[in-house]
Length: 184
Image 1 (cartoon, rainbow, N blue to C red):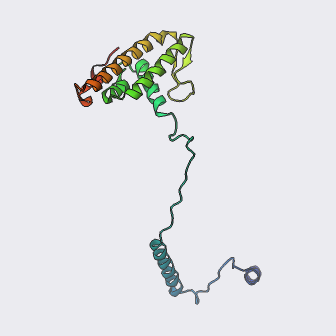
Image 2: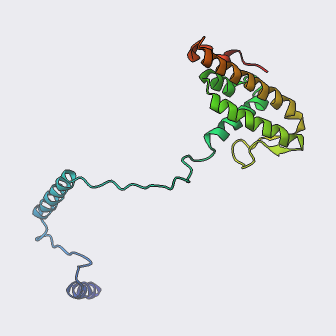
Image 3: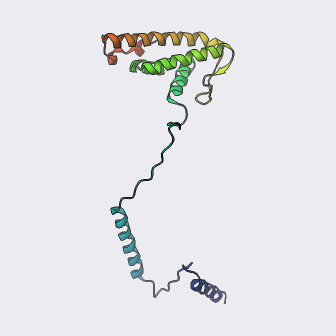
């Protein structure tokens, strides 16, 4: 009785709605022919869409938007150099050596400016390495100021050496390798 009522409700909805909610197929109607027809339609639809090139959707951001996630590349290098200096006693110059060996004067000058600003801030008391937060969340105080000053001075000397070698073209930049012997 309940099966007949359910069947009647489904038939009523099938007649009064534009698209049927449920399709009922008896075993006699639904053979392999229906499945094969469906497969043939789907394979031909796939071929048609593969032949037609759909335009790729692209997103464009304003020029003022960051082009990286997390820290900016300069802040990342700065945070790594300070972290290495104070937290890696066996390999204090790991990051700075790579920068010196690449002879990247722009990064070295920016790093020196950041170190001098940090030295001024830490002379006033405890301060985070990165004002904006993030990174390794290191905190420095007045005890670290002499180390930061020495590192900034060594970077200034290295920048001067790189600039003089570029002007005089004595040694190719690839052979300069200032980072190999770098120590404070």
